[in-house]
Length: 149
Image 1 (cartoon, helix red, strand yellow):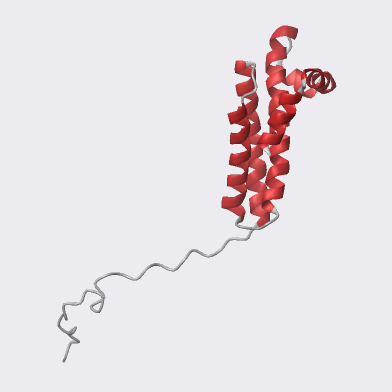
Image 2: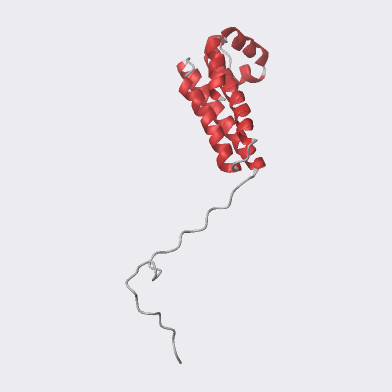
């Protein structure tokens, strides 16, 4: 019975396979549906966080709007791959997330003044809340919407 014996080392580490081969590259993902779902979920979460920041500070913070857009785009790209439709979807969802974050922040701030709950403002008096947003909206509001996208 004979066993295979490797040849003696030649002194060349590359010839002796002393270094392992590089792993194969990861397969390219191109799942638009998963990317849109991840971007939508990120938009919901970031809109809530952005609204909480606005409600707590009573100021709109530009870096937070940038963060909203960045996180939504990151979620879409990581989950959906490099499909060219995903940045457009992420930008539209970012606009919506910044808008609803502003509405939520306004509802948090106005709930103290009006002695109503935030959910009542958002779900039962939404028309009143949007009219407040329109009155409060200025150039900076639209700048933050553009920054978010």
